[in-house]
Length: 301
Image 1 (cartoon, rainbow, N blue to C red):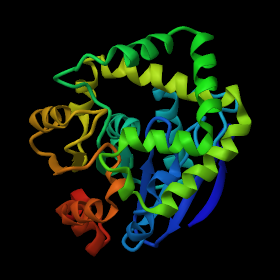
Image 2 (image 1 turned 90 degrees about the horizontal axis):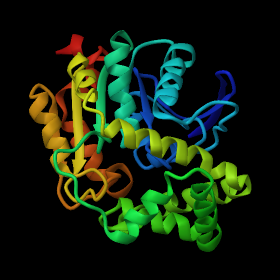
Image 3 (image 1 turned 90 degrees about the vertical axis):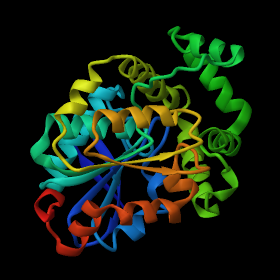
Image 4 (image 1 turned 180 degrees about the horizontal axis):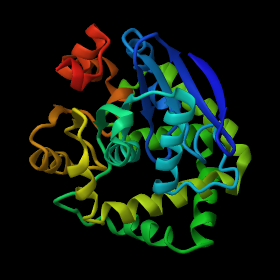
């Protein structure tokens, strides 16, 4: 696993897991980073040239006069594919990264050979009213200034290690299943980002407000309809952030896509149960055929 940096109107950090096959680009979710993929990246590199980037304002990619809104980071992903990778990719995105993967496949179809959506952030058919305490926090996040103060205070109270463990408790059905080295890498990254102070939360707030608006926008389904690439959806049955019903709605609208449900798993299966995640990925015919023949999935089938 090598750390690399590209210059795309500012530095963009990414991880190169190696591999000599077709490029497979991994895109993390809200509040995540490239290291979200470190438990599966090396195995993916056995079949593909595996890459994972840090979106603007996340991981080790600074905002650098850029925006962290979904549309802006979707543009950054395409620029990375076009200028750094230079050929069509298999794109894999988790949560907000899954939303971005749909946009890339819909808007730039010639650059996407296949898509893998991991608990993607998409409009849901059933919305559960949040608990009153969480509803208050969500409301506060919409108020400029107050949101930054609350987020900064939360970081200072919990500290990097506490914040990582709290986040894992939210995104995992069983946080104890996350490999120790993955937890340690996230704590080290959080310690590095802790020095950013208020800048640390600016990207998170921009992105969270943006994805919240997009998940309430029915025009997203128009983008889903435009996707031509073979697509696999992997979803944890116990995802507390994006309900399984949303993934089933996605499969209903696109019956040509493949849905794999991982029972008893949360929002980040590639971190929580990497072996089961890779089993689901390896079982998908488009992934397996392209891996074995070296051809783009659509061409291999």
